[in-house]
Length: 259
Image 1 (tube, one colour):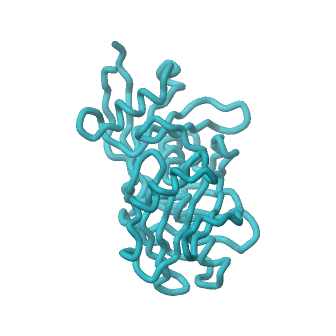
Image 2 (cartoon, helix red, strand yellow):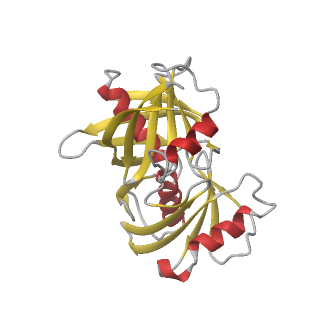
């Protein structure tokens, strides 16, 4: 049995257990470790496990494993937490973080009264695919998202719809699913369902996907505030290039655990 030093963090209450593998030895089975640590009854409890490692092409590397052990390509809320962790470890306020979907640039905007981080997310790619749902949009921003535009969040049984989409042969890797309601041209309200987790308080890349759909279809304009169950995220997009996600990164506690 070994002891690991963990940091519990969250971005708009999308919560993570962070492990610095530059400090502790490399994890032999990160999927199993994620399932153990993220369990909310027998573990620390989180939506995902963030592994911070060394990178040959950037300031650091981030791997994200969802609560079910599946590895995700990118996590907008998670990368903000990694940026804060690295900044507070002395790495600096402007960093480049390697992820499975490419190198992500981050910048700390402020520390007080709230620790805000700006993240450059991949430019959205809109995929034409018949999902059998009205006003449904498939968007890839480093990871895949289905965005359902509705007049009310209650119009859709989000969990049931998401589970159905996971079984679609057109989406063999699964997909994150979101319902978005346009409140004004500067404000959206969103509910999230994430692969390997379920309903979550926030999804950073999902918020980017929702904002991109709204902006592309003339329903909103940049910058747009995305109201999620866990808070508010801001998305900036000029309609062509990379998108930017701005939101909080909170440090909750540190602990040592035996695994």
